[in-house]
Image 1 (tube, one colour):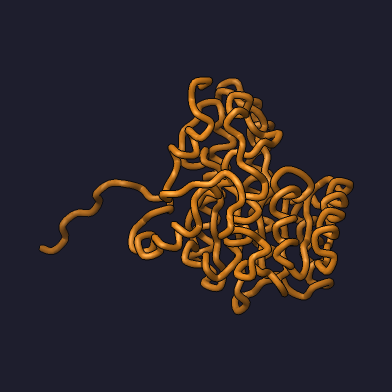
Image 2 (image 1 turned 120 degrees about the vertical axis):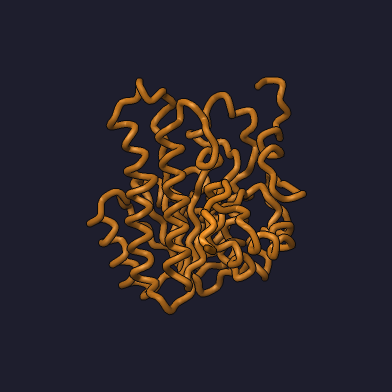
Length: 299
């Protein structure tokens, strides 16, 4: 892959005429159109990577009322909190070290949120893990299944608690970090791919069962994190600010037409908005089973 241009994978997966690899004006979180004043936002996986360096800072720049930072590492969460306070001191921050695969811990987390804020508006399901590449026959069963513990069970527990606290009347947004691998086949990465596809389907069910919730799956592009494979590091030039700004945009009313859809942070949100009718009229940006089905039953 050494001969491929650094934008190869971004361009190959482009849905919109324009693609970006860094923040651009339409997703600038300081823009009045993206203002998050009054919003209570939960961010899992907020101790490192795009959670700490992209999503949390973006919501702080958008002047969110409160950010609930969730991850296992309390020390790193405190570091994220300090950065948020530098950006927007008025944003309230609740740091809550939590193992999201533990149901009791998740219940305790949301009890603290209920006690401190009374409600919640936005959930960013950003926590995720990938054991390591291996063929199915060579995979350690415990390591292989751990991707499902975090990427599926953990996201389910947090999503369930979020929906319970949100209720059926208050408008809410759920943004789940997915991956391009969720919709494509990559040998040696079965546990990560299948678990991320399951998360796509979880979002579909939230969209179907809760009309008051906009549930969108976001492919964060190629950002240099500790989860990037060595073979892809040369292509990983997307910035955390790109993902952060896109996530904030998804939490606005302008993005609610994408409910139940899957998008990439690389795609132009302006081009997506311009294609709104096309997206809603067809099966674009959704998981579909292709083919012509059904027998003639007119007789």
